[in-house]
Structure formats: C-alpha cells, structure tokens
Amino acid sequence: MNKINTSVFAIIQARMGSSRFPRKMLARLGPYTLIEWVFIRVNKTKNIDKVLLATSDLPRDDELVKIANKYNINVYRGSELDVLKRFYNAAYENKAKTIIRICADNPFIDPIELDRLINFYKENECDYAFNHQNKLKGNYADGFGAEIFSYNLLQKVNKIAKDPNHREHVTLYLWEIKTKYIVMPVPAPKFLNYPHLRFDIDLPKDKDKIESIINNGVTINSSAQEIVDIFLSGNYN
View 1 (cartoon, rainbow, N blue to C red):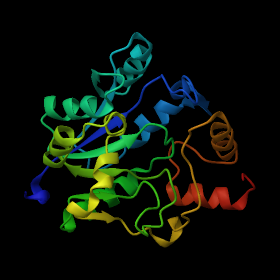
View 2 (view 1 turned 180 degrees about the vertical axis):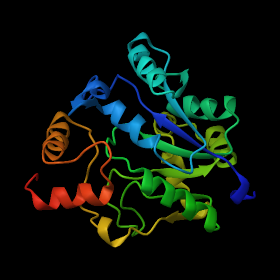
View 3 (view 1 turned 135 degrees about the vertical axis):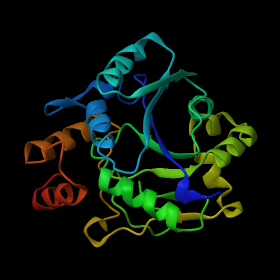
View 4 (view 1 turned 90 degrees about the vertical axis):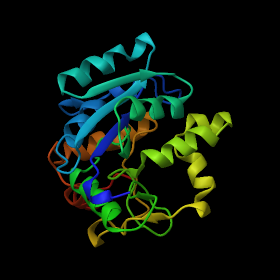
C-alpha cells in the first residue's frame, strides 16, 4: 500500500451506555460536554480527511448524533455490543483506507499529536502505530493520541476475532497477536514523556480531576504540552 497517497479517516467511538459512568459523554467540562471536547479538537487535525462518529443504534445515543450533526461529524450507527462489527462496518461503508481509532473518553485528545501519529505511520514500515498510551516503551502520557492502521488489517481482525471480549474491544485481538504484525509506538516527545499520567475519563472521579485542570487554565485550544505543564504545576493526584 502506498501510504503517502492514502487519505486518513478518523472514527470516534462513543456511546451513552457506560456501566462505570452512565451518560459520561454529556458530562460538562467547562463550557463543553465531553463529546464536544473530542469533536472540536479532532476537527483541528490537519492531516485527517474525514471524521466519523461510530455509535450504537439505540435511542439513548440519539443525543450524540444530534451533537455530531452540530459539528459536521458524519455518523454510523450499529450494534451496541459488537463494537468491532460496528467499527468495521463504519469503515467499510465509508470506503476508509487508513483509519485512526479515537476513544471519546479522551477530552484532551490533541490534533498536534494526531498529526504526529499520521506522519509517523506514513514514514515507517508498520501495520499499526499508536501514541494514545504507554505501551512498548512509547512513554506517552495517556489521553492525547490514538491508534492508526489500514482497512485491510481491520478487515482481517474482524474476520478472525470470535471471542466476545475481542468483539467488544476493537484492537484487543490485534494486541494479542501483535507478533504477527509490525506494531510500533510513536516515541513520546520530551514534553509528553510522562507515562504515569492519565487524562482519560473512565469514572466520575476522573471527570472531577479533568474539570479541575480546566478550571486552572486549560481551554479547548490548549496543546498537550500546555495541559501537562498546567497539570504538573498543580496538585491533582
């Protein structure tokens, strides 16, 4: 595949049915909801050609669709439980070739780091690259980046993965068979080399921490570097 000439398609995973934090996508973080933080910040990425929300076909996710429409985000709706199928069908129906997978529980996802991920993937011979968390000595703080891979790889995983746990988590099976592919971390720049830091929202207490950081100066336009600097200057642990 000629990666240089391949368009990049970002698929944002989100739904309202979190068991640990119900309706967290609509939790207020300063002037925006969690899902709005993600939509607005991803839309600032220079090297993404199209952005899509992949959500469930349940009525409770209608609210997410309305917000996506507000920000000109395309929408695909599918199975609530078979997340891998939903994600794959979203890519298939939109003819995606190179895919960035974005989890919507990361309000501080950074367009600069998404562009860094895209450039790394294009410049290196790999099947899958990532900078969304600290694995394989990438040393990234958790919550600023994403995962990138080809449609062909996603198609293979969707065909082979059968276990319900693998169907619930899009790239879990890929990680379990990673020795069959070239999996590479994006090396964290010095200012994001804080692998112990987390900026995702899984539980209500995570939301409280993120809100405190926002109240101390983070805006919708703040870079990952600025966010880390603000965090390190305070006491949020």
